[in-house]
Length: 387
Image (tube, rainbow, N blue to C red; front, side, top):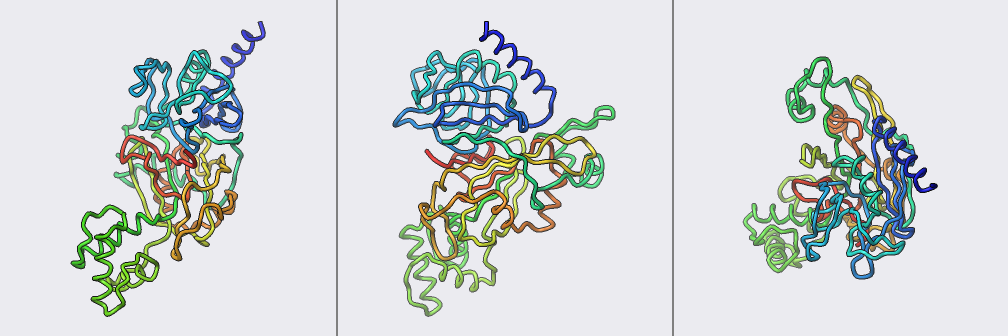
């Protein structure tokens, strides 16, 4: 009787949740083997789960639901059934129903759910909904900060002002007096990684006639040879070292200023729509890993509330600065407020994003650049903190 009553309460709660326009977050704790569904800051459903066992651990980090199928079979494990599958990565991690959901890690990396709960969860989520997987239990908290974007003007005025915006953001023409809402933005704020520095340096060296070979972001023999040739051409000691001193000389030799140490990327409906450089003050200090999501707002509103989730996991890779890499073990988890206060975003970038802002838009903050799980198209920004 109690189980039936609990299920009816969940049904009623989920019906209420569908009427409420605030964003849904699914938050999973690998330590507790538990899952909680939040609508805004409110828990609307909970379940036990079973994550990856030893040797097949479930990655932690920030994910989105990329694809949903009621009936799905594994392409990796002999066609094993994965009903009510909700894909988190294209490399094979998903939420799905299972007949075996012990309260300990037992899967091959996916997150197993009890059948009844998986069915209900499938019915209340949309493509693009965020899934946070963490070691400990974390929960959304309301946050206010001047750096967070706000909608700058009503949708109708935006469309009249900017035809590009009308086609990219609004997606559809006016239907009566009501506009179809655009998909939420997915924004990634991250630092400029060493690989990005290497790629740009390789491109510059090639343009100057110092052949590096394939532009791949890898400091191999070809790149080191090109650096030595470049140094010799300036009468400098040829070291072949890719370091801050070399980059300063390289940019000076081409009349370029050193690029900003951070970048902001924007996607919508799994497709890149905008990106721009930003600056991060005190780059030697990690930003940490955070997800910040805009609450629901109406057409014509010029402000919205934000909720946040911060992961306490240490950075997965070393933080890279002008002076070289800082080892992960020296990095301390930073608060969201500290991270936001160190971001310098130009007025033009703020204007561009503010006019695109839609309900449920989110900002992921990471020290690790764009992850390998984030495909050029067909995914949101995936932030992996631990595999």
